[in-house]
Figure 1 (cartoon, rainbow, N blue to C red):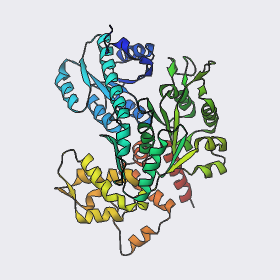
Figure 2: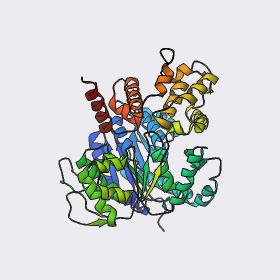
Figure 3: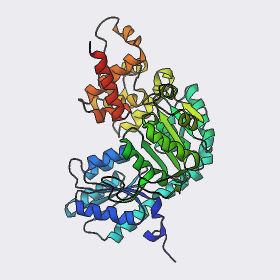
Amino acid sequence: MMERNTPESIEWENLSLIIVDDEEDLLNLLVDRFQRKGCFVEGYLSGIEAQKALQVRNLDIGIYDINLPQMSGVELLRWSKEVNPEMEILMLTGHGTVETAIETMKLGAYDYLRKPYALAELETMVSKAWEKKRLKEVNIGLRQALLNQALTTSGIMGVEQNFQIIGQSSGMKHLIELTRRLADSEIPVLIEGESGTGKELFAKALHIWGNRSGQPYIAINSGALPENLLEAELFGHVRGAFTGASQERKGLVEVADQGTLFLDEIGEMPLNLQVKLLRFLENGEFRRVGESRLRKVNVRMVTATNRILEREVAQGAFRQDLYYRLNVMKLTLPPLRERPEDISILVNHFLKRLSRGKSVKIAKEGMKALQSYPFPGNVRELSHMIERGIILAQGEEINVKDFLIPQPQGPGQRKEERLLSLNELEREHIERVMDYCKGNKTHAARILGVSVRHLYRKLDEYASNSIH
């Protein structure tokens, strides 16, 4: 009888991998090895390159060399676990870094492998990590009925240790209940809301709380890639389909088969690609780039945008037929300034999650400042503010200055600030984030929760308005 955890016992074609190693020949060998098994595989020579990829999509398993240029494998592991806690990560180590590899287990690595190693040994370890991840997903599905019953007036729904939707305001309770009712449905859901309101959190809830919870959940930022690359990411490509397409590769719609495909920033999708997405939504059929063969998958579609798509349709920037296809059901997330009663519970949540064992609390005046701040960056901005406060606090109390909230320059300025238009408030916030990031647009876009392309467009718009 075949042993459950042998490499031959798993469905390799359902597995997505990212491999990071600065030895190019070895990297190419590993990528080719797993691609031949049918896996979705991406390979990178540095942690910085891998970070960019992992900001766009969630993958099942990472294989990281400890010794990487610019960013070490340990740093990449720590970052990956913050961004995607469900991802299982294997570490590759040389003779001098075995102790470090052992330490990575405490940071959440599944296991480590010492160089030199046999490829069959690596495959066996990958299969075991994949089995562990799938078992966790199955357990989530088995717990689903009980977890749905936990949706009470507390407004906090935890589907696993690292997954929570937090809110005690009436609007949030209604949204959580509606999301629970939609979870088992097959209809497309459009999630609208300002940047930082938690759109991806609700997309994950639709997947995890529903009957597809044991299947893949694939997320991609529609505005993060150029049109030709975005099409290849979605639908896959054959070898030679375009410059750089040296290998045939599955698209994310195939990886998401039987599961959920989440397209964030759908308003950023180019019009030409909107046509192809519309065709796909009609019957689940598509062609890889450069291929004539028609393929078919079954995915549940969830999309999100921080734009007002009705306005985009009226301006000709978004297809009306695609809008109606995606907007079968809409979830509109309120900005944090419209649910101030949730600020204190969110603050306590972020303090617990981000303190990493450090004993801190927020001073009375600090909490008062947070509750009166309009939060143009919404919940994401509050999270970053608490994280800064924990780092900058001198003792066990976080004071107002530790949050780096802009202080009024003179009498009456606070009143004037509260009377700013939303556009002015947005501009002021973007400029403040750009200052905080020292002009690094990629970092700023990540904090703001928008694509780099969207940020460039906003900055160009501000520059044009400043010319007299």
